[in-house]
Every structure is written in structure tokens, then in C-alpha cells.
Image (cartoon, rainbow, N blue to C red):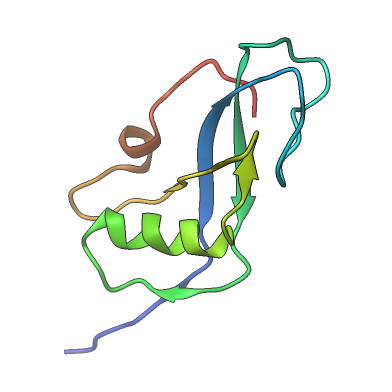
Length: 100
């Protein structure tokens, strides 16, 4: 029996409400009005082994990779866009009409 261990470069997402000022390390995208929702997505620079069945392992990894990114003075919590045996990526991050 062969076992494989994969290294993941993950994509992360978070939803944010626009404000009138762009503060912190993430700026409000142009063309949005105060209160508009939008999502930020990034690809991690680091990798992690894909051996956990707990999605929170990957959420923690991408949040750490974001290096305490802030928006409007608040630290952002990120979610991995990924699946485990018990969690589908689309269910994990949810479907919204928010701009990316």
C-alpha cells in the first residue's frame, strides 16, 4: 500500500464591508460604496502538508500566511478555499454575490 503526502498552496478568502477610508494593509477596491460587501482572495506563498481532515487546520494556515493583514484597523480571519473528506470548499466559504 502506498501513502502519498501532498503539499498545498492554498487560496484563501474573506468577506468585508466597504468603508469610506482604506486603512490597514488592505485597501477598499475602487468603485465600491460604503457598506458594499466584497471578498479578498489570495494565494499563499507557503505550503502545508495535505494530511489533515480538519478544515480548521487549513483556515489557521492561511490566516497565518496572511501575516495579520488588516482592513480598517481590524485583523482579518481567513478561510481556506479547499475541501476535506467532510467539508466541501463551496460549503465552507459559502456562495455570495460579493465582488472578488
